[in-house]
Amino acid sequence: MKVEQRIERSIAGVAAVADLFPGIVSVHDLRTLGVWYMSAPGLRLLRTTLPTLRALGRAYYQQYFDPEDAAAYVRCLRDVSTSTGASAPLLQRLRAAADQPWSWHLSTVGVLLPDEVGQPLLSLTFSSSLGPLTGLNPQVVHLLEESLFLRQQQALFRQLTPRERGVLRLLALGYTSTAIARQLAISPNTVLTHRRNINAKLKPKSTYELLHYAQAFNMV
Image (cartoon, rainbow, N blue to C red; front, side, top):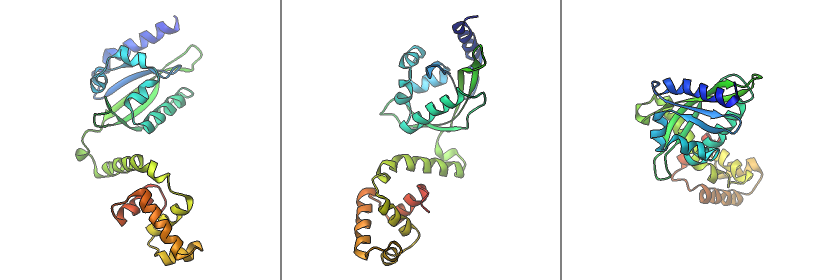
């Protein structure tokens, strides 16, 4: 049986039951990383059609996913293409359009169909909607909020110089400007300059938010 025939038969088998599952089922061609199938709940969420998704190819990820999630998803598919096991769970944000709110999903990817020599050919992704954050376990909500904070603030955080990050870390540990100056062997005035620069770049609303930065980016 030809490869394309095997692919169509495999997808037909998935499509026959996919809409019965409480989540979104999608199939990717690991040769191109393009979407080859998506169940009806996913098409409704993205407000699209299967021919449109197929035509997008790899642009699918940039179209619907947060940029960092898109990159992580592609890496995951590449990893799956060289193994036979399932991926670690992926926490993903996706939306139908730029003016729509993000929807949180927890996804797992595995091999659906190998080729003639046993190499992964198709992958299957199962995604469960996490729904409103208010309905989740408090620990899960905290993880989601931390993940969202990192994504929103990463560009600002990257603006900090290594010295400014060092000052921020010591501030988060409770050091005064004088103590920071002694610790880093710089003058108190230089510490104040670094603090002004940190505030100008991060624009924190409070000292607590500065601490949040340090904790979120594993500085303390």
